[in-house]
Amino acid sequence: MQAAIQRAVDKAKEEIRNEVRAELQGAQSAAAFMGTVAERQPKVELFELDGYYRVRAQMLNKLNLRGQPDSAGFNYFPKPFRAGSTIETTNMRLRLEPTINASESVRVRAQIDVLDNWILGSNPGQVSDNLNPDLTSHSDTTYPVPFYGSTRTYTPGDKTNDRDPIIPRRVWGEFQTPLGLLSFGRMPSSWGLGILANAGTGLDQDFGDTVDRIQVALPPVGTPIGQLVFVPIFDFDITGVAMHDPHGGAGQGQPLDADPGADARTLAFKVVRLDTEDDIRRKLDRGERSVNYGLYFNHRAQRYVYPSWLDQGYSGNYNPASTGSATFSRRGASANFASLWFRFLGPRLRVESEVVGLYGSIGNANAGSNEALAPAHLHMRQWGGVLQVEAKASGKFSYGAELGAASGDGAPGFGNDPTRGTFADPNVLPNYGAIEGPQWGRPGDDSINNFRFNPAYTVDLIFYRRILGQVTDSIYLRPNTRWEIINGLVLNTSLLYAQAQCPSSTPSSSSAGPGENSPLDQKGKRPLALELDNTLTLTPTHGFTGWMDFGLLKPLAGMGTGTSMAWMIDLGLAATF
Image (cartoon, rainbow, N blue to C red; front, side, top):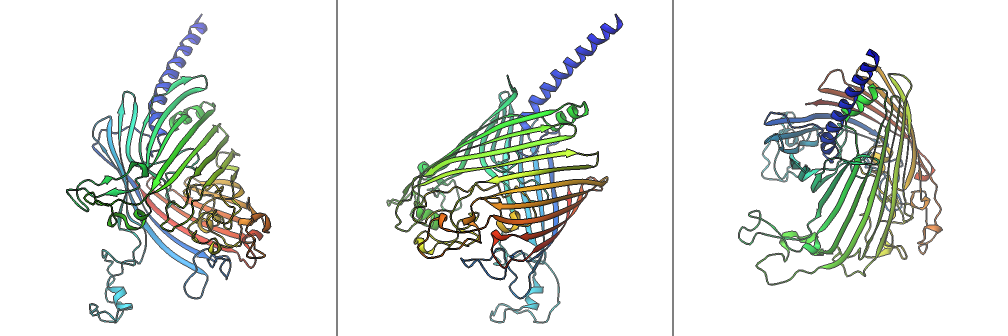
C-alpha cells in the first residue's frame, strides 16, 4: 500500500511539474523566438546595459590568390598598394545594448555601436600632420618634424573615415499584452540556423540583419504536433520616395511618404515549436530529447519606383509645394520565400537543419535606372540548405560535419557583388572568367537563380567569409571537431571542401569568342577550395573572452590557373557585460 501511495504521489508531482514547465515554456517561447536577442523577462531595474568591447588584430596573406586580376579587371581580394602580399590591420568596436524597463510588461531596447570596426591608428591628429604635412594647404601650419604628440582626434567630415563614430543600429519597443508579446521598431531579425535571417550577435561577427518591423508573438497553442507559437509579422522594407515636411523643411518636422505605391512591404509569419535553454537543460539532465521545428514564410512586393529619387533624394522634384510631378516607373516585383527549420537534441547527439526556397519575379528590372532601357522581366528560382550533425565522444570532445548548398546561376561570376558592370550595354558586362558580376543582362538571360546565404552566417575563415563574402552557387562539406582542453579553453578544428554548382560562374570559365553568351558554351571547373581552420577560444572568467584563429586555404581548379595558397591569423580580445 505504501508503494502504491508513493507511486500516486510521484505521478501527481510529475503532472504538476509538466504543467509548470508548459506554462514556463509558453511564456518564454513567445519572447525567445521573436528574432530578438534576449530571452529573459525584464528585471525590476529601470535601466540595464549589456554589450561588449572588442579588439581584433588580423594578418591576411595572399587572399587575392593570384597576381593578376580576373577577366573583368578585379582582384579576388584587396591587395596591398605597394609590393608585398600581406595585409595587417587592427580594429575595435564598443557595442552597447541598453534596455529601459518602463514597467514589468513594457520595455524599450536599443543597440548602439561606438567606433565600430575603426582601425587602430585612425584619427591621427598631429601625428599625421607631422609625418605627412599637406604643404599645398595654407591652413596647415604644423611643423613638419615627426613625433610631436600622438593624440587621436575625431574631425567631423574627415574623408579618411568611412563611417560615423557613433552609429545607432537598432531601437525597438516590447509590450507584453494579454494576447502576446508585441514588438515594434527597428530590431534584429533571426531565424533557425541563420542562412536566411541572422542577427549577427557573435563577438567576432561584422554583419547582421536589422528590420523595421511590427510583430506579435501569440501565446502557444496546443496542436497534434505540439505547442506552437504563431508570430504574424509586417515589415517596412523600403519607403520609395519621401518629401520634406511642408512647414518644417529639410531636417525638421515630419517627412512624408510621397507615394505608397513605391513602398516595398513584407507580410510574414513564423510558426515554431521551441524549447528554451532552461527547458533543454532540464530535458537533457533527465536523459530526454528536445525536438524543435518551425516555418518562416515571407511575401514581399513593390509596385513602382522613382529612378531620380535614388540619385537626387530630397534635392529632386519632391517638394510638396511644387506643382511638378516626379517620373516613376512600374517595377512590379514580388517574391515568396520560406524556410523550414528542424533541431533534434539528445544527451550525445545534435541534428539541425534549415532549408530555404524562393520563388518570385520582377516585372521590370530596369525600372530603377535613369537610362532609357527596355523593360526586362526576370524570374527568380532559388534554394539553399544546411545540415549539421554533432556527436559527443566524451564530456570534453565532440565531432561532427556540416553539409551546405546554395543554388547557382550560369552567368559569369558568383553573384555576391552584382553591381559590377552595367546594364546599359550587354557587351560591357563581365566576361566569363570573372569572379563577380550581375547574374542577368546577357541576351536570353532573364533569371536570377543563385541563392545567397546571409553574410552573418560564417562557414569558414577565408574562402566564403572574406573572398566570396557569402555562400552562393556552390556546395560544401565541412567535418569538424571540438575539444575542451581544460575548463575555459576550447579548440575548434574544421576542414572545408567547396565546389561550384555552375562551372561557368567560376574564374576558371573562359569565353572562346565575343559571341558566346550561353553558359552551356563555357568550360569551367567545379572544385573551388580546400581550407583548414583552427580556432582557440579562452574564457577564463565571466566577462572576458580571447581567441586566436588560423586559416590555411588551398585554391582548387575552379578558381583559375596561377593561384597560390593563402593564410590568415586573427587575434581577438573582448570584454562582455
